[in-house]
Length: 384
Image (cartoon, rainbow, N blue to C red; front, top):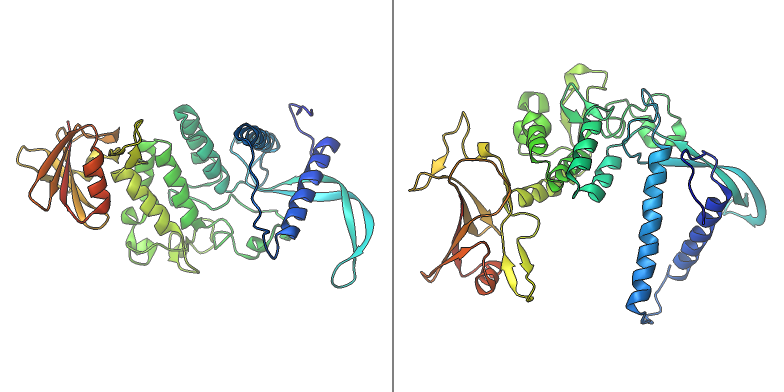
């Protein structure tokens, strides 16, 4: 098989070109076959054959990721040594042959024989997607966070993250983003959805301190200056004009050019903060259980502006609604950060007047009742 060199050439090696051509041809033939209908025929394959196939696919994905890091990004004030995963490449056909065909307007078509890789500046989506592969590696996550923080993706004036680094000097062949003024829409603006995807990945990777620093530093709506943002802090924008925009009066102002997915990302963050990645799960005996894994900073319970609320034992409390129906109250005995921790005790109050107490996890029957909502009055979880 082909072994990558320490530094990959920009001209695609012949063996890799052949691999791409074979795979691309197979994909195009498959799409042509299923363009209008599926046959409905099913085929059984042995599990070991499927596992072997998936392993080969994963190996190719890993090779592709490693090659992408070697090729790297390149742009204004980016020499390709940031250590941040690039997001996009271009491929210029350097050799071809006419194949006798023609397109819809009669122009001749050709088959590619060789191509060369082109590089682009950094885009925030690159590290966002890469972090999904390292989210269980704390040191790798911290390293990538620091690299992004000190890169051209950071808007130092707004303490936010650009959709892309500077696109200065890029060709208009790059696409429509080059039609926009820097700092506006798809050209180096603050794309709210993508920024929230990045923050969400910090939370998934258990970078709790960094996540809440970004939140309270002005990266999310509740902590922005409404006079700068220019609209309600309860409303997500499509994008914000970044510090790259020529008019400084517009820096940080939110605009609704189209719908945004940022609300969905915010809800995912909310879920991870209050419930954890898997509130309900099956144990080793295939029985349903419920377990909270909180990610809440101490200042959500009490800070300099808010004395907080306390229970009858003096523990700080915070309450949220589960499924929009069940009030869940967390009792924080020591008023500390609850980062990646679970309650020592649960008390589930039923509408019938019954009360059920659990250590560590909520067992099957009551966990099922919580999922069904209607019979549960409230839940109290105690962190000691």
